[in-house]
Image 1: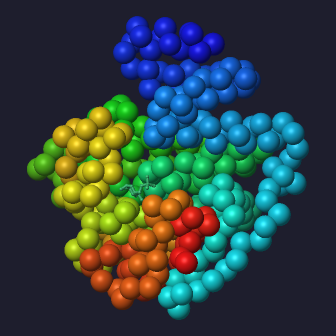
Image 2 (image 1 turned 90 degrees about the vertical axis):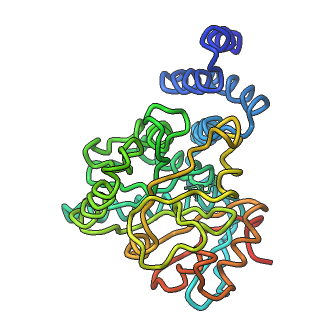
Image 3 (image 1 turned 135 degrees about the vertical axis):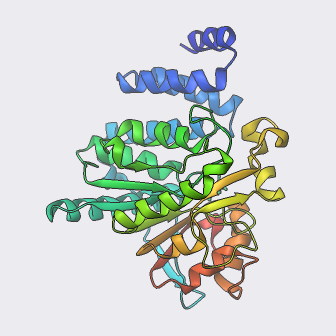
Length: 332
Ligand code: GLP
């Protein structure tokens, strides 16, 4: 099976893209072993590719389900709630997977309770490697019967100047990791338009804000955190009252994305992002942070005074924020 994808790789010259698609196709038609073979190979060859990770977590869920139900199998450890900033609650889970499943369950509960009332749920969604397990968990829940028919989504941000079809566009990321596998109505999906010409950007940003308002505001916003403390693409020095706008990406953010884009020179230099004010308007916010590399910035977000230098500290001003952390990202 791996040979088949290698042939496809060589012929198309786009292996790290074609192989995950093939693994996904196999997974969809029930050829789990074939998918696993490709994914294991990809884990060795391109361990930093988010598509590899998404498939890995998705497969893992499928494999666990094959053994017993996910519930029975989930970790026996209870998360320990702790407080550092009086405003920012954080929960430390034994693993990133457990944290992601807990958030997926919370989202599922919200979707179901709203569906029972005949109402929609508005979710704010994030990209990056961190929420991949969350999306894999939501796909599993959908396969177990959870409908997303009453869900409206708004993504935090999108790179400017790349097509939707670009491998690294957030549009592509979201469809590959979540939207292609659930029944959310396509017209309910909102992602900032990354190919907007410069002269139309102000209008596009205002339209995004309007769409959020018309949908009734965001019920639950999922966030990651950049290594420089950004939320969405609100880089350090972003004021707290900002709305959806164009942001110049800072050097650290470009460096973090360089690998995925095959070099810093290929990383878009600008993005459209919800503003800090847009994010803080969400009724509830859950920030996910996993891994040792996030421990320092998480600690700072929890303990430092609110400041534009570290946009995640603005969350301290919000009445309902929880950080879901794994052990490695937890404050010491
Ligand atoms: C990008 C996204 C952010 C995300 C951050 C962290 O900058 N715009 O929304 O939180 O990456 O990414 P990762 O989860 O890969 O560390």
